[in-house]
Length: 402
Image (spheres, rainbow, N blue to C red):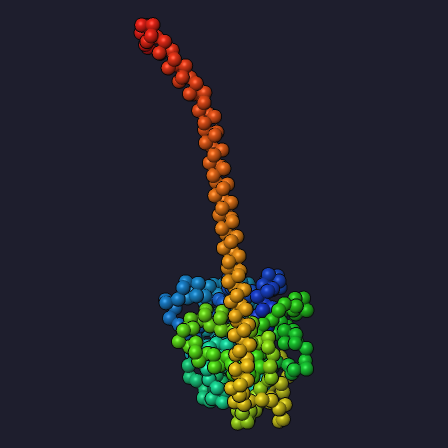
């Protein structure tokens, strides 16, 4: 069994994609340093989170999904060093589910890792992320109540560090305070890779030896683009019901590839929600200090400043602004459709040419084979012809035919 397992359970929108991209791009390098990232693919950790949170019925899933958590544990059981499991959706687990997950990793020494972020920026980013997942809620109505469901991700249930810690590391729980690690995201002026160096150092990796030059997705839309996507989603909720459709077409194609590159103005929620974020930030830091959890970084980075830079609110977006983005989006998508059809026709032509060439080659090969057969059969025909001529001569001379 692995000696130590680090469970990185969130929070969502706290550089998790950035960190996971580095990890999954360097698995062999990590193994050489004695750290295992189990699984066949990155989605194994997502599927494991869905199973742990009982979001799905395991028997109704394809085998590679419903066996994900068992496979991760089996790999960890065979590894002698340190292992890491990372997905931000674990943050939504109930106290009972979290307790069971930690127990199932025994006898390994389990450490809980939570990357965290000041709540105002986190709130705005998570609302946008919910839109990329086909939500249609107005920001003014977003996360007004804390959900009781482990299946709900985009809610204070997963965004409030204190609430997550209360479920995953309750007083008298399985984890001592020294095994709970909180990594606040550094402020905007800090180097982007600082969170990686802190995270990798916690795992026991040589952080400076890793390639940080990859492309890291998950950038933001402007306020008009976000509101445009929200309104588009209202027309897709009944047809884009599959997770694959939402991921491929809504999140990746529409949001990340078409709306994010437009840039746009940044935004905040309303004044009451800003104040709620400020209060939650204070509650988070007080809870971490009171429980004496290990802090890797500065807890002050989890506080919303008394004065924040002025930004627009989503409810200020006018219909004309949405129409402007939508018109340009239609034009862009029309070009995409044309390019797709041209590429499809090009591929069909190439396939037709290849088929004709294959047919011609097959015909030539058949002709060559027939010629070879004929050439091989010619001596036999000659022998048969000679025998027929001899037989005919005997018949004419009255001699007996053998």
